[in-house]
Image (cartoon, rainbow, N blue to C red; front, side, top):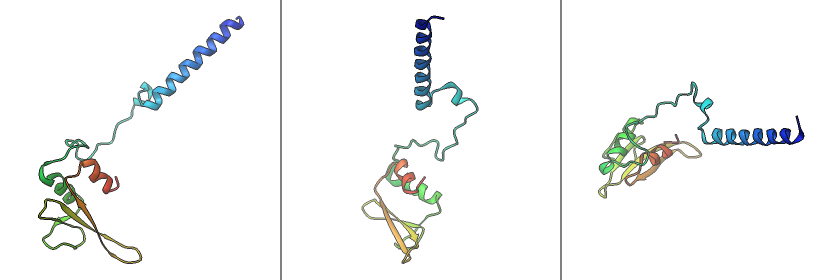
Amino acid sequence: MSKLIKSALKIKKGAEEAARKELVKKGKHPQLKIGRKRPKRDWQDVKLKDRKEKQQLTEKFLENHGYRRSDTPGKPNTYVESSDGKIRAYTPFDGNKSGVEVKTFNNPTLKQLRTWMQY
């Protein structure tokens, strides 16, 4: 084989390798999809950017994670709907002092709720 053919083959092989790496980076390489299944996501019928009417999504999400509706604010693992339509969730925490952390939700998306729950 001549030097010209060898160098052309090296260039072609390098270009193919670069294209394969790009496909792998994007997750579109056909070998990556063989036998790989995505884990089922909770709330499959709700898009991550969806907001349901008047805190309906927030209430269901909190109840799904062990929170319950309360009329008295400040109790651990409860949530209260305020007069302005916001929902305040009370989560217990321990550290130097033990107490309750308050998170106020104003019509969040599912993605924001999942981020808060540290998914």
